[in-house]
Length: 354
Image 1 (cartoon, rainbow, N blue to C red):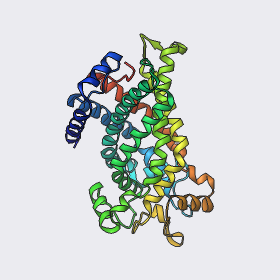
Image 2 (image 1 turned 90 degrees about the vertical axis):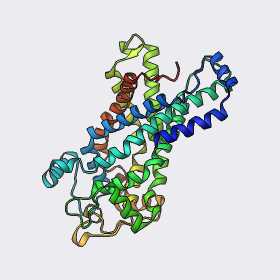
Image 3 (image 1 turned 30 degrees about the horizontal axis):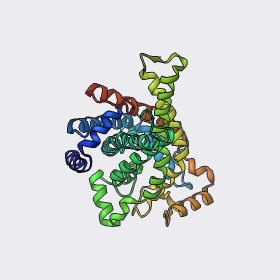
Image 4 (image 1 turned 135 degrees about the vertical axis):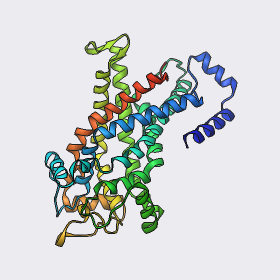
C-alpha cells in the first residue's frame, strides 16, 4: 500500500511541478519537497517505528484510560489509576494489561507513519506559500502555521485508520466475562460490518476530527516551537553545537503532549462512548451488571455531550485523565525522539528550515 501511494504521489507531482519551479526554489534557497521513493519510505518507516514503540511502552495505561472512559457509572469496577491497574492484574493477569495492544500497534504504525510524513510535506508546502506571500525568502514557520500543518497531518492519518481505532476500542474493553468475544482485529471488523453496517466503523469520527485539530496540531506546534526557541536563545545551556540532547527533546515532547491532550480530552471521551453504541452483547464494563444493566444510546456528538454531563456531571468528560496524563508524556516524547533518531540513522533530512 505504501509503494502504491508513493507511485501515485510521484506521478501527480511530476505533472504539477515543472523544472522552472524547481530552479526558482533552488535560487531562493528553499529545498523542494523530495518525493524520491527511498526518502518517502524512510520517513514512513521512522514514523511507524515511533508509533509502535511509544504505544507499547504505555499500553497498560492506555487500556485503563479507555476502561475508565466507557465504564457504566452505576457499576464501577475501575476507580483510579493504581486501583484500576491492580484490578486488571488480579482479574486478567499480565496479558490483561496489554489487551488490545496488538490491534493498537497495527493501527498506530500506519497512523504515525502517515501523520509524520504528512506533517513534513504539509510544512514544506505551507512554508513555500508563506515565503511567496510575504516575499521574505528567509521566513520560517510560525507557531500558527505549524498548528495548521499538524492539524492537517492528524486528520489525514486519523481518517485513514479510523476503522481500526474503532474496533480497537471494543477489543480493549472486553474482558473474560464479556458475553461475546471478538477474537481479534479482523474478526471484530467483519462482525461490526455484518451486524452494524459500514457506517458503524466510523462512529465517533466527528469528535475525533474536531479533537485532532487541537491535539495533534498543538503537539507539533509546541514541540517544534520549543525546539526552535531553545536553539536560538540557547536557554538554560541546553544547546550543544546547535543541537538539542535526547533528554531535552524528551522534555519538549512531554510538554507538547501535555498541552495537546488536556485541551482535546473531552472529545476523546465522547468518541470512545460513541464507538460503543450499537454493540450487541457489549462488554459488561459498558452495560453494567445485573439490575444496573442498561443500553447505551446517543444520537450524535451533541447528544453524547449532553447526556454525559446531565447524568454524570461535567467531571465525566475527564474520566481517565490521570492515567492518560501519566502515559501521554512518555508516549509523545518517545514518539518524537524515536522518530528523529530513526531518521538520523536512516540518513533522512528532518529540519524543514534547512
